[in-house]
Length: 135
Image 1 (cartoon, rainbow, N blue to C red):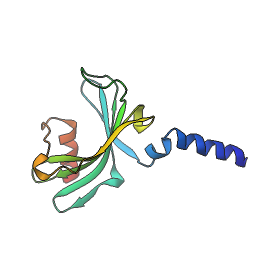
Image 2 (cartoon, rainbow, N blue to C red):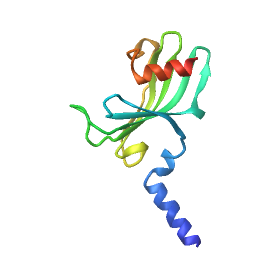
Image 3 (tube, helix red, strand yellow):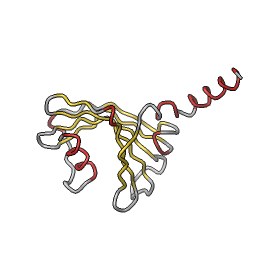
């Protein structure tokens, strides 16, 4: 019995599912064209002054021109300024399988400066989520 448990643990670690399962992805929202689905981890949401920090995950089902065909999902850590709804991606990792599983294709840590904020359209899933988290 102990050997079976050891084998299962080794398999889970080697397939990277332990990392992806640390999060509890909720509030899945699919894009209008069905090409992507976006989630976030409610327990990771932290509010400091006018900023919200949280982890999110996206699955890419239908690729667009120029997309890397090896990337099926991404996990990222965001900082949102609730005053102007601008956001920054602080940590980003791209994965070879859905739900943050599979081989890590690449990752980066990019503590953008305040001037490097990104802004989404008010009709986007990201804007709607940021608005919800800020209120």
